[in-house]
Structures are given as structure tokens and as C-alpha cells.
Length: 380
Image (cartoon, rainbow, N blue to C red; front, top):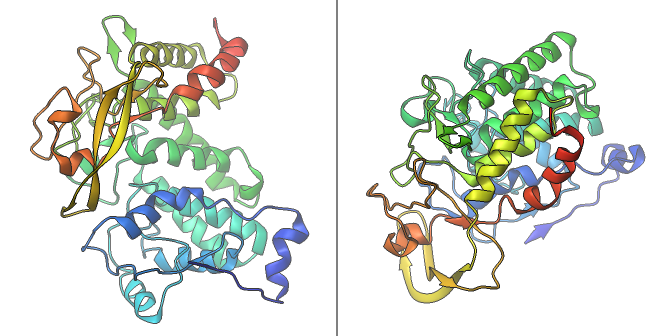
């Protein structure tokens, strides 16, 4: 169910009057999916059946939600729907949790709220949106390691949340927002010079960290993992089914970010060329992933009435596995027991249906984006 209101107030006419589209809400999709579809009893409030949503052009309501969910330290907790129409009880529960330190970049969190607030402030001109955006930027600055990396959570991350994280858009998502601020993008045109300079320095250090984390194999530069040790920069494990490995999905995201850099240095060109060569090496052909009906099952985090299988199909488009063994470039998998296996069929049904193990993530990059970029920047 989605609801739409028509308000006569001038503020609601601003996007049309100024000729701007409503701020993009796609950055919230990951968290929305988790809130509405994944069982997480640790959240301060849960969704109701058929909980309504604001439409994307209801900028003031969505922005009010973004403000509501911001913690006192300037960051945001993960896995809440910024477009949800909350009732009084839900609103009160969120407000009473403002002092919590559960702030994170996981599941495309915090940097997406900062980006949205910057665009909403451009449209609505309300000081509260600007001030919350600035607090979010300051949270990001404080979370960055001296080596340029970002942890999954902040402040005071522990365990695998302290790793330099690429999974779920952390490093690339944060750096993209900081680059927009540093480059004086239209929605950050209002930002003060001191913070703009901090953003520029943060991007410089972040790019250096990206290059340092890239794995070097016997045959040259390869890709990036889902997370890397914050001291050694080597790929590291996270949850039990997330083994230390290389990730075609996160490698694709990193390369896409590097393609956006103006006047790339020879080091960046080599990094991109090496990563693209590795993505081509790890491409899988002749298989298709299918969901098939199966008896209903309920696990701790999710319910399902399907299973996931891999079948032979010569006509299938190319695929990449979620995790690639560093030493061999073979696809690897794991259930929650953390045991490495080499086929999806060996993974238990809970993880087969609870994680995405294959994807087409690099396909457009390899077929279109990289060739165009390489024609302009290759050979440096």
C-alpha cells in the first residue's frame, strides 16, 4: 500500500517550481527490504502488516523520517524504512532510542541519509535538514581510519565490524557522497569550505586505501574482498558464511567508483585494468540459477517456500559467484557453520535461500562502461 497526499503549502510545490526531480530514494531500498522482509527482533520497533509508505515525491515526510531516525552522534541505525508511514507508538520508540550507539554504514546506511538530506535541503531550504546533513558528514569524518578506510560500524567498532568494509556499499557509498561534497555538486553547493576540504582529503585517503586493499596474485592485480583487515589490508572473514575471499560484486562497485575519478593516475589505470582482467577470468558460463517450489520452511531470519538450485544451460548469460577463493579463483560457499564448500548444493537450505550466491554484477561494466573508459584512459 502506498499513500499520496496533496498539500496546498508552497513547500510541496518547490521541486516542480525549481525544475528538480524529487531526491532519489533508491539508496534506501536495501534497508527497506531488511525492515519489511527480514526478521530482526533487536530493532526498536517492527513493521506492521501492510505498513503504508510515502510516495517518493513526498519529500518533506521522508525527510522528517530521516531526521527522526538520526542518532545523537550524527549517524543512523540500519534496516529501517525511511519511507514508512509510522504510527505514534513506532515514532515514540524511535525517538526514545536517539541515544543508542548502533550507528553503522552497513546495508547502505548513513551515507544514503546524508545524500538524501543534502538534496532535500536544496529543494525545501529548511535549516533543520542542512544541520542534520552536516552532523551526518561530521559522523562520517570521525569514522574514517587514518589509513583512509571505513569500518562497517562506528563509533568503536569491534570484531569484523572494525574491518575496512566493501560489502553492502560501505567504502564506495561513503566515498561517493564525500566526492560529491568535495566537488561542489549542486546539492552540496551550500557546504562550508572547511568541510569541503575535509571531504576532499577524505576522498584522497579513501582512494589510497582502495588501491592498497586490491589483492595481488601471481598473475597480477586481482579484485577486492567483501571486507579487509584494517591493519594488514588483506581480505578478511565476517559472518560465519562470509569467508575471506574475493568478491566480484564489490570489485565491480570499486571499479565503477574509480572510473568516475577525473584524470586517473597510472596507478588507478593499472588497478582498473587488473580488476577487469580478473573479473573476466572468474566469469562463469553455461549455468543458470533457479528458484524452485519447496515445502514451506521458517528459519530465524526469514521464511521461504522455495529452494535455489544451479542447472546447466548453454544459453544462460554469464554469471559470477559471490565469493571467489583467493588462491584458485574457484567459487566458494558456506553455511552458518563456516565450513568452506565448492558448490551451492552443499550449502544448507537456510543459507541457499537467505543469501544471493550468484549475480551478473560486472556484466554492464565489462560490456560497455570499461571499454568506453579504457578508450579514453588506457595505456597510461
